[in-house]
Image 1 (cartoon, rainbow, N blue to C red):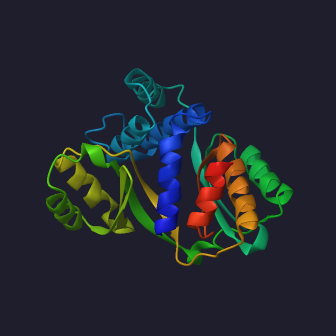
Image 2 (cartoon, rainbow, N blue to C red):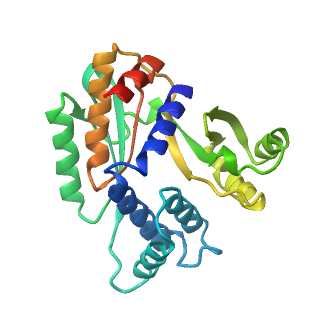
Length: 252
């Protein structure tokens, strides 16, 4: 898990400065739209899903007026009709890949995801075929410089809030909870007035597969192709993220 966390944190640091910022905004807006539609309305005080979506939007530096417009549009008569769909398949060397999408056109999304798999040496599987390889966890990313109370005391509060694992990588802290404790941790962080950089349910691989660096880079390039698709919200995989691989990707 630590390797995945380190890789994710590197992407967090780079993300707001690179060409993907517009796509991060698009995904955040979709998350807000789904939260308003499925989570119980446009009032974040009464809609925990929307509060998380707003927090994630702030985490990618989305301006407040853009967030407000997204909420207003999502609650209006002309709101986009998004639905969440998932895809499971294998990349080269048998690496399991789980793709979560939010789309207003399922046929387009199915065609796009299948094309990315097949053009990059992978294959799209049937839904449910990879579910057993991943464990759903709550994952919260915080900026350590914003933690204003004693770190030991803070970690005790996190454990009380359902934290099962805490990882510290440079300027970021990642907290993991069981899936059922996601809401409990969200409430605990609100109680502590701690704003997250991101908070979401992720699919964490139960076991990972280590590949030679060149083969592993092909997998990460495949993951990036999925992430570049506007319909794709999240991509999970069971590739082992080694320090050697991270160093190689940072050099590219």
